[in-house]
Length: 275
Image (cartoon, rainbow, N blue to C red; front, side):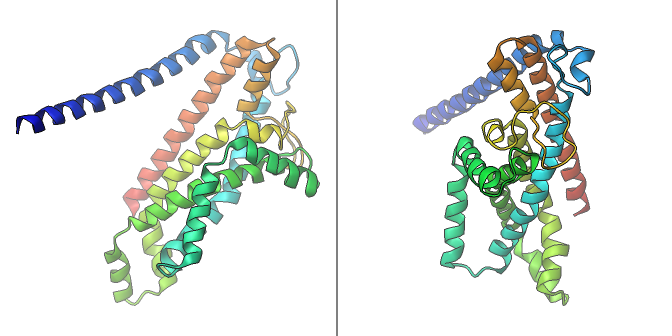
């Protein structure tokens, strides 16, 4: 009995230590970014036109929002509908379904630069789109598709079967049950996957350098080249001439990620309350 208590205390100590190290690391990173970047935030960084004097991040910020929306418009419907088919319609034990799941897990582990090279060869070169927002959005949608599929599938599986049985018992068809009962109940879990996907889009650099390019301008169409905030920060640090502005860009990027996550969580809570 005493040995069991000692082992429980030891595991609890390890758990608290791991949590403490993780929290301290996060606080250090956030604090380092804020200390380095906040003093260099100035109005010229938010000018609508980029030049070598103001090193404005506003074009990159607008491009980041547009790129995120484009990638989500492509990937979210495909990922959610694929998860609905795998969970609600595909027969259990189907070999094709198992193959899809293995492929999805494999794709989620591929480095982003490989996606970038694929986007360069296929979207930029083979399809002739050139360095454009559209090429970058399609590349990012392929990257986040496995994440959205898996999170949506797990969220749909978490919905109790009694919900489905009750709907069938009241005379609802399969399609109506899925879209009126199951999908709203799983929406908070699906949105959690979308939040993670947004974080990956906003922080992605390697794939976009090879597909969307690095032009510092506000895009007026999907076929124009542009740079996101992460690419903008990478370009500034690579040049080594505007490191202070790079740290300021990191602060804005951190604020954007926190804001997007906060809004997404609020939406998920509202949807979950209605469901």
